[in-house]
Amino acid sequence: MEVVIVPDARTGGELIAAAIGRLLSHKPDALLGVATGSSPLPIYEALTAKVRAGEADPSRARICQLDEYVGLPPGHPESYRSVVLREVVEPLGLTESSFMGPDGSAEDIEGACAAYDRALGEAGGVDLQLLGIGTDGHIGFNEPCSSLASRTRIKTLTEQTRVDNARFFDNDIDQVPHHVITQGIGTILEARHLVLLATGEGKAEAVAQTVEGPVAALVPASALQLHPHATVVVDEAAASKLKLADYFRATYAAKPAWQGL
Ligand code: F6R
Image (cartoon, rainbow, N blue to C red; front, side, top):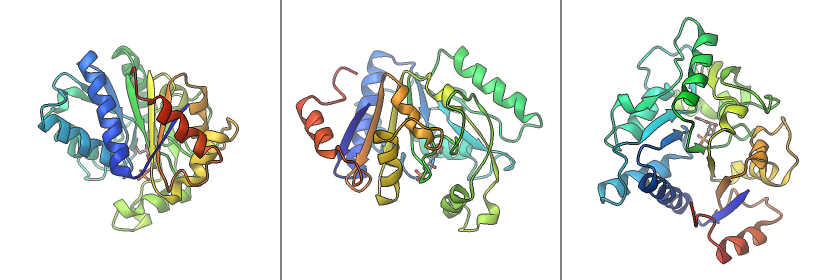
């Protein structure tokens, strides 16, 4: 696992946007897996700035979603489909036709999960999957004790995650859905490159367990240790509980982890 410690979220966003720009320059129709929530926003801002400056061309890129709430009415502003369209697809000048995601309002949710998992494979697989991390160590919405081999399926959110996400729903936990569709951990691990961005002290414990703890279903993000190309970008606050922080700094200074992407 590559661990890159950056001074702040903005720098992390720029570093990751640069990697996406390089991916697009050698694979213009790359399938980019996007996450939602607060963490990846600096990436989308930096990528949009690069595109506007003519430094990256996403015109043939394809975008796919990591997870989705179940039961929000279509078009709800906090459905992840709406969020991805607003934060990623539109700013990059793309249209809905370059975008795929699971249908959280389907009558047959199990069928929708299986169809989405299949569609990702048929699209050639995800080239670079962006990830955030929950305070409880989840990736996507694979909550603690998710199977490390899981596929796209319906999951129940923990109380902690619903509390964390209430800020997107007028700080009213009752509005936060209980259920979600999420790519499984096995599905996520099939992406060619995993890039997790975590910022702030609230993520420090989850980051330390992900990077330095054992691979355990209790900390779903620790499954990144099983991936041959996983990069974890953290700001100083999120890195504050890493025992090997100095080693990671020295390693990155000696040979930038992003080289050769
Ligand atoms: C959302 C997702 C989640 C979030 C995580 C952190 O698509 O995949 O795993 O990344 O809940 O959320 P923030 O970034 O808002 O702290």
